[in-house]
Length: 236
Picture 1 (tube, one colour):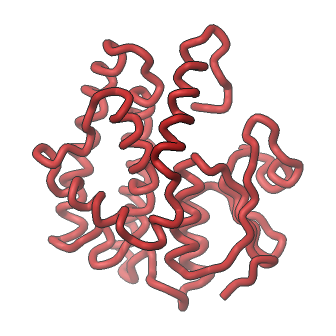
Picture 2 (cartoon, one colour):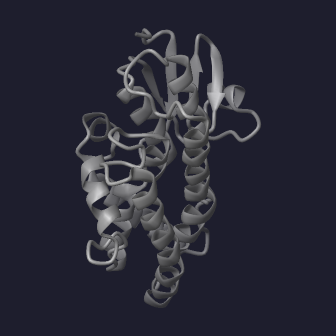
C-alpha cells in the first residue's frame, strides 16, 4: 500500500479523465493525497508536473509525475501489479485489444459525443446525437466481443476499456438529462446499458464518481457561459 505522502493525484472533481485515475487507484486499494486543481488558475505544481499539456490528471509517485489518464491507469496497473485486480489482461493480444478500444473511446467516441456535450440548441443536439450513435453501435459490438458474455469489457472484472468508457457515464446521464436524449438506451444497446449499471455499482467507481445533481448544475452553468459571446476556454 502506498502512503498518502508517496502518491498525490492532481485533478478536477468534474473531469472524466481524473475519474479514470481515481477508479484505478481505488480498484488497487491505494491511499493517496488528492489535490483539487482550479483549471482556470492552474497551480505551479500542475504546470511543473505536466509542462507539455498543463492538464489533469497528474499522478505524482515519489515526486515523479505521470501524465495523461490512460497512461496513469496503465502505470498504476504495472507499478502495483501484485495489488488488487489487474486492469490489463496477461495475454499480449488481449492487452492490445484493450488498448485499442480505450484509444477508440477517446479518439472516436468522445470526439463525437463532445459535440452533443457542447450543443446549446435543439437542432444542434439532434444532429450531434445522430452523429454519436454510430460510435455507440461500434462500442456495443465491441463489448459483446470483448466480454464474451461476462460482466465487463475486461471479462469478470473491470479492465482498461471499462475505465476508459465508464468515466463518462455520469456525464452521459447529465447531458441526456439536459438534452432529452438517452444515449445508452436499453432497447437499442442492451449490452452497454446493463454494463453501465454493473460498472456504476462497483465500490471503487461509486467512490470516484461526482454526484449527479452537482454535476448537472455545473453543466448548466457551463452551457450558459457557452451560449454567451465569451465562451469559457477551459473546456474542449
